[in-house]
Amino acid sequence: MGERLKFTRLPRHVGLIPDGNRRWARERGLHPAEGYAAGMVCGLQMLDDCIDLGIEEVSVYGFTTDNTKRPRDQREAFAAACVLFVEAAKTREISLKVVGDYTSAMFPDELKPYAIERQGDGALKVNLLVNYGWNWDLQAAVCAQAESDARRPFTEFLASSDVSRIDMVVRWGGMRRLSGFLPIQTVYADFYVVDQYWPDYAPEQFYEALRWYAKQDVTLGG
Image (cartoon, rainbow, N blue to C red; front, side, top):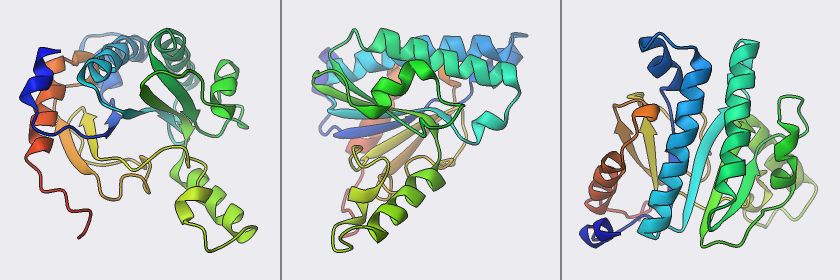
């Protein structure tokens, strides 16, 4: 809580890309599943940090439709990690929505209730992307807009319409790309990269990203 006083400005909504789980595991001679499990624990710590800091909304990349092309044991491992994350996260003061194509066989059955309706009424709004694909998201919007009032904002038709505009994206693992992460909501987002792998998460990494964000000139194109 004391760290909050050091930030002159906090992002309202933070997007998190927790990358590097497989690389972390392989460098230690472990199965990728152990990297996903370690990442799940870090995700819970990150949630607690966001709650303590007073951040209003956080969107977290779980796994994408592209990720489902990986070997079966890896698919099962990251899907199981997402389920465990939700089961543990829901005990916190959050409101949780799972965003992704829940009609697919790749979507965990245990998470379907969270995809159909946001659950919980805590102060921190959490969006977990599970079996999410940018094409699925935008295609849903195009189809819905064609059947409705075209004068309404395009964002209202997105499959991810319950997710607000993101102020800052933080990606772990050193890669400098969005990887299809909520392309509409991130259109004005500042992008910060942490070189450490996600299972090596430490609060100071996040704090440094927040200090960096506080120095940015946020104009939203104006």
